[in-house]
Image (cartoon, rainbow, N blue to C red; front, side, top):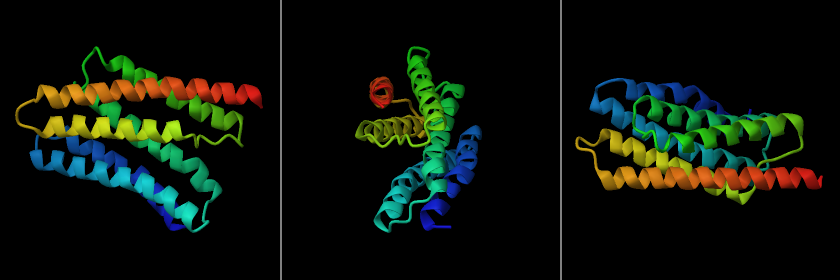
Length: 177
């Protein structure tokens, strides 16, 4: 097993602990949760980089790395909805992102050779993770900051728009095959 695969597995295993940190009333656990999210997000970047740099890509990594990414981001979004950190006006963005991720995973199953390696997907993931990070920071502040919250919601909306754009682009690519 390659180090990149170990990083992917660790992201899957640690995600429930990250989520659990926010179901306490202890500020220290919230801070640990934010730190875990940052670490898990970095491992998402690191595992792909390591696998490509050292030519250690594996079938496991090709399948599980995107799954681990979706487990982390979708778990975080659903937790934020559950904790009422995402307003009812912005929940539509969560649904759009959720639907996109399900469609992409379905396309991967149908077309084993399909790889979601478009640059737009990487940008969407970066914007989404930044939005989640800002929502998490907003959770740990003792007083809610409207500007921080607004920034997180705008980034979530951008991630949803990028999700729509990328799924349309993927569908068009598949129609060319």
